Image (tube, rainbow, N blue to C red; front, side, top):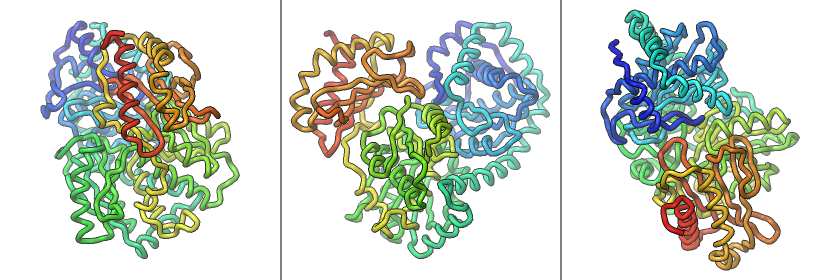
Amino acid sequence: MEITLSTPSERAAALQDTIISASGWRRCFGGSPESTSGAITPVEQDITILAVDAFLNALGGQQNPVIVVGTDTRPTGPAIAEIVLLTLLAAGAVPRWLGVAPSPQVMAYSGQTPEVSGFFYISASHNPVGYNGFKMGRGDGGVLAGAEAEEVARLFRKCVADQQYLQTRAGAVRHLPREALQEVLSDQPRWHRQSLDVYQRFVLAVAAASGMEEESFTIDLRRGLDARPLGILGDLNGSARCAGPDRSLLPWLGVRAAFINDSPGRIAHQILPEGAGLQEAAEALREHHRRDPAFSVAYVPDNDGDRGNLVFMGPEGEPVLLSAQEVFSLVMLIELSWIRYLGKNDDPLAVVVNGPTSLRVEEIASPLGARIFRAEVGEANVVALGRSLAREGWRVPVVGEGSNGGTILPPAAVRDPMNTLLSLLKLHSLPLMPGHEGISLAEARSLLPVYTTTATDDPLAKMQVPPISQKELKERYEALLQQRFSEIREEVATELGVTTYQILNYEGVETRQGAGNRSGDHAGGLRVLLNGSDGTPRGALWMRGSRTEPIFRVMVDIPGERNELHHRLITWHRELIAQSSGAVNA
């Protein structure tokens, strides 16, 4: 193919617009956030070549490594994939091209196939359609974490300015025989079928992982669904899940399944599966429930299909949109109850969540004998902490990111809506909670502690701040918090019983207590616990510069239905951040 090299200055400028983190690399490949063009520029070709090259070098120079490659359904996916496959071939790697496939399928296949060395997945997850990017991982089924992710980024940045190096790498790609790429493309149906089979078996094994034989689990599940039918509607929104197992696996289990927007690439509405992104599913669920009352739940994935948020039919016969925090909390409640139902009471139980996950998870975990551990935002961080705790002897049935509804059930290493749906099927079809046999999904939701928590799609959850170092911003924020806490002390004391506060910093898998207690990487999340006189958290404030979008994320989390207090706190919290960043004068 024709490859026109970009200049070092063009690549340096593009690098400024590229977000690189362990959660994924993302940039606006399509020219604008809403672009539907499939074309990519020479500088984007070069960035892709250098990213693949850095990934292979970070694998340690393996001889002919087998690399699984897949993509979500964004318009630029095919063009980027062609460059990825050519670069892998030119470097002597052996690509297994799956085409469009949900990211959990790509990662499960990588983790369950011994000869696979790693994966390179092309996606920008929930970002607007004009974005795209990369997720990379070894053959353990999870994205690169910590030092490995940083090493790939270091190698990539090192080569961005080296024109001779790029010319050599691009030259190898340009001169590769076209037949080599055609052979990889022609093998796609075979590898996709194999990966789909591996993924379906893995999903069922994960659901039964807490102690039942997989065959007994599926038999009991199907028997329960036969006795008590359940209908699930999937609004796949043109995502990679259109090419996944959803339309075959759910009916095979005995679910009455229906799907809308299930043609790959036909993105019908907002990609982020929250708020407005759930409305079409809610309307379709209402209509299906009217025709068949068994239909009581709908799910909507993001574009790469690694999370799916929910809509339930409520007790009044109207669809209820669950917040992302509720989705995670509900799955956690079910999975901990599942452990207790099976009588697995010997090992200490741990649940790993990210910093902005609601305090409601502590309320759920404590009566079930589990302890909550927290890590920085990013599935790589929560998975790494979960694995570390498991090595120490903890039983870790759930890890995830409550702030976005992402649920990971080990041995899985990526969030997956199939994990969420199979948890719901356990609740619906098996007597997990003593005295609650036959509990409905809506009834289960009513068991969750009530919290008022800033939703990620709330306009108040995002801020644009002027260019400023995270170190300086957070130091200013901590000083302002100390000066101005008196402005809200009386209100939070009256409503929540709060008398003081505590600052926590999250860096990777670490939680560091106290103002200024950061290692030097000041980009992690900062959380302010609002504590009672006994030291018990009664609420929380949180903030972090996003590593996947050019925004600053903020959140308030308080118990009960307290919308007015929530608005007061989020407004005050934002004022302190704006003043700390220089957006407003002190």
